[in-house]
Length: 401
Image (cartoon, rainbow, N blue to C red):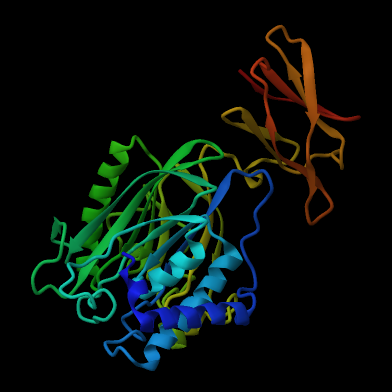
């Protein structure tokens, strides 16, 4: 939906936002540490507060500029962290114009507006039916696109496409089927913004889980991630039981900041057993100085891998584990006695147990002076066994086929 750019006032706001971005500097204090060679990806969930509060019905008001400034701050924050997947809520046409301008070259974008427009202005200025989009931005260098779908959730009672006459609380979700290029594994990501009442939200969530699982089944995908503004604490989301879905946050993150006035737990990221969390970061006021002035929600950033990968923290000291991703072998270890810079090698053997080559492995140092392995190596097709040898130390048989 690109007719927004034909509006001179909105074009001025976009230009103002552009100026703000280039003048504001770098946003964000920290980001999630990511280890070289680990087949992971980052996901950011963010309710951008696009319309309901500061973006009002009046056309020529300061609120337009405020929305542009807030969007510019958000772009700075996103460019600081460059999430591999970004899910937005309350993203109206103005925000989409700015987001697309800055992110469109690097990201694919999916997600439709949740309304049936009565006039051309309704996508931009209406606090009654909240015509926003739950969009998913996925990094083109990281994922291949397999398909997407937007669904509408009407007060949690029915599933239909389009707005019901007189309804004031249109909610919905966007689902995207993606292939992670590094390992060719597939995941369905669902981004939603549920209603304001726990009972309504739970009925909506039941529909959403049913539709998402059906969407995943059509694409032959078992890994599922839900994220967004659920408008309720994780403990009362009945359709996502702890036996099937994990959340990276308990009640220690108050993601709804009420523009700095308080907080509650309403934004979440959930994964099923085919995925695992590696790290998390809540971009609250301590991590991002513009958090309270950019939205009434704090962005949530998580680091995720597929469950087929074994993180280094799960490997005991003096042990090594290997995971296969296509033609590459992911090697992880705990701290190994005798390991040092440059003295570890992967040794290749063929079907006759004959030596056919090898490669030096990357050793890394932890905070206590110990060394561990974290590397990804190419394994030729004729290699049937791989050992790890530590010069002057132990030999580990880590993998065979």
